[in-house]
Image 1 (cartoon, helix red, strand yellow):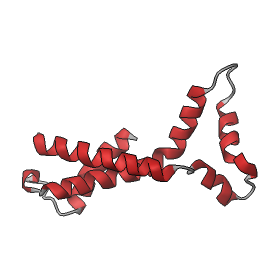
Image 2 (cartoon, rainbow, N blue to C red):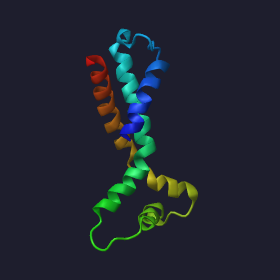
Image 3 (cartoon, helix red, strand yellow):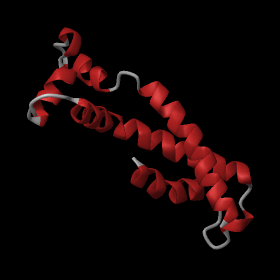
Image 4 (tube, rainbow, N blue to C red):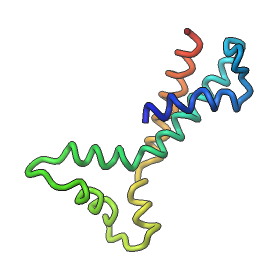
Length: 115
């Protein structure tokens, strides 16, 4: 997640019209918007893998193969269609995106402004 957020920040900033030659001239709101966008996209992409990682790390008892965690999430609630399986991996993603966006917007923009 963090690698993707950091990697997307500069290209998004340039898409918003910040000159690569002199980024110090960029208005602060463009830095905030770039940080927010990069973090939101990264959170949306990384959410399914984070969900599986957290479930695997939080398990107690004998270790199960990772594929067992994937199947457990994929077919939760009796999901049988491909759309329902994908939806299971993105359950709760809205909260994750909002949280990541707010943190990314403030963290990335503030760091960029101070450096």
